[in-house]
Length: 231
Image 1 (tube, one colour):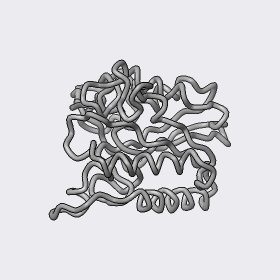
Image 2 (image 1 turned 120 degrees about the vertical axis):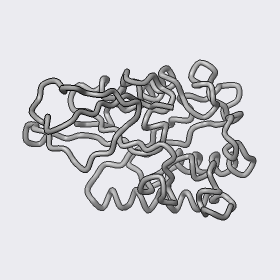
Image 3 (image 1 turned 60 degrees about the vertical axis):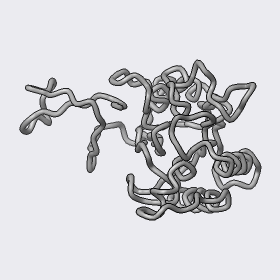
């Protein structure tokens, strides 16, 4: 499914105000870098993760991913969206490992080509701890997020007893006082069905039981305390 719309144009059009002969492409693109003129001291925030961050199942071309909606809440600065659908915390392959619920839902890919058991909560806690400590060592403010609900998803492998148990344990750790993040946003609570917290609320569900729609992305955005983003 297309997560957003891109445009491709021939030749060097770096200085063009509008792309000439551009072709609309229903997918995202990778770039090796970008230079942006900004006042000295300008700061940005980077949102990285999996399809929840990228904006899978939000309306293509409308900038309704939660990083885009969060940017519009900021009094200054902006959020850079570095989400990669299918990305995981403990295994490279679909992008460099960063984080995500996919560790629990794609154990076969984790040990490709041979199937394997999914990681434990302890594995995920160790991975998140290493990631947070690396970022803190670089002098960055690190804001974590709980793993979202996925009960009843159409995708095989995610809604398992072991996976749900690990997700609950990791989220309890993130919401406790021993994690290494500067703060944690409770994404799961923002979109969970209040009567069945392991399931996405019907009005926020894109229809697959795993991804949120535009309204769900807004609910995540609204759960972020803007005082955490002093840009």
